[in-house]
Image (cartoon, rainbow, N blue to C red):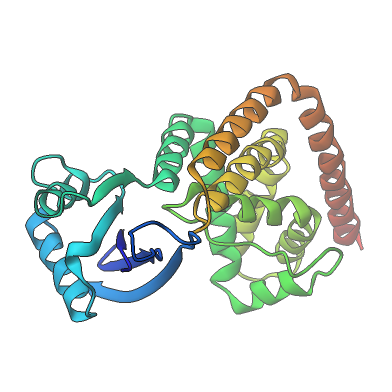
Length: 293
């Protein structure tokens, strides 16, 4: 008989549930262990208490004709109303279904560690604040966005992205875009400063140029980008339905070793940042030349 794992993920006012099913033979022993993830759907949550969430989960399972006594696993984040050991969802379901073992989502754990680490640094918070301003500046105007896309000195398929407020590891993609399109972005901002008749637009573009040409910003793009690249790889693997616990532990240990080694690679990151900074100087000289013409 198939057994059920429930994975609850809260996303603002929406709740997502998934189930894992494994096949057993007539003696209750696993045949070939194969985990299948099936998306059930979104459920509007009006009561976010442990009681309310438990009721929503049970109603959803029953509505989809799943056998609740076969519940064997629970995977949530660390919110008290969900993971609380006394009145959270996990405790309430566990009291009725003894075999419904709880496992804290490894991806959430990793994200929480990363979130706390990044938010502890004022420099990092300011850096991402500037990055968000950059995205907002271009995305709030179709004309500016098209200008950026038409600047094809590098891969235009890599473009600025909105920062994800919950999944820090995914911010790697946004940093990757800045690194690979650094010159394109500066050129676009310079064109706006030279050609725009909107004073507010010019002021904002100049503000971004000044901060992008600052070496600390360039170095942060390289260093934080490398940091997030390492974590992002592990984060994606942890979300794989076929991932084994032993492999996850090994990946996390490897990531920790890599992060520790970065401390001794400062000169390498510095040299990369210097090379990118030279391109920024080129853009500055180009802007002066165009202004003179």
